[in-house]
Length: 269
Length: 66
Image 1: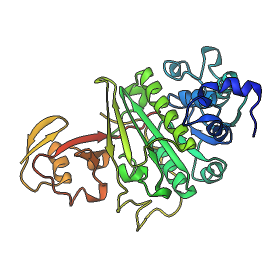
Image 2: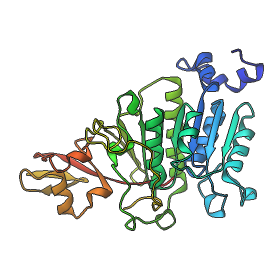
Image 3: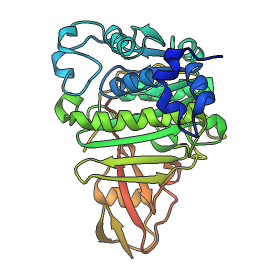
Image 4: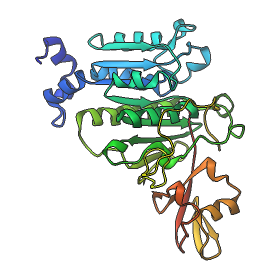
């Protein structure tokens, strides 16, 4: 593939990087990434991955833009309140980079549509806002043998990891075996989130996605990064595959995709 | 034996397991992950993993917002 004049100028700062170069930029342009959620994490993901020239970006969300989203969901705008989040995010992506293709999947991810949807992409990015979807995304990525870069946020805190059980690493269930018991977890709306924390974690997630696509640096597979915004501290802990993991362990009890129960959003103190 | 749990010193009986520690703190094991000396303890081993003197434990809470 050869770059146009405009592409050389647009991606010049990437092409300058010794670990990226023209070859790396070509890889990005040929890559297909699926974003789960067009919210607090999905917004920086969408904007940075589009700007980086990830050639095909799909975005799954069934919600519409609400005024209460705009404190953190920076892909959306006040004049797009009421618009489908997928359409609003696509508009933001195309505005920053018309060089890429955006697929809008205005739907709720479920056990019936996940496999077919995931098959069309190289890498899955989870920025969803509920545990049911998070476990579904993990399981579907496992069965599809796709790399999953996952981040989560609540209040002033963030977590980030990459799951590649097909390459020997742990999966999300190796850390959090199953959704937490319902009824004990405050909702996002109750617990709150500092808007900029979504930007911190979504941007770290975008960085890890670009590294995975380029095959550079140290993968977050087998590590969990924990961000404490109030202390301004990061720590990274090791995660090994759990031999008792019900999904990726040697004696799995989950052998096909299951429809999650409607799980409450967010987390707990 | 002496542990550090979420940055605070804590005295526990020798041989206490991860599950036992969570119970003594009043935490539901289904709601947390446990980090022991900078490594996540596999959930399937909470009942069998005995803690050791000097262990540094952090409770990692489930967060799922996006």
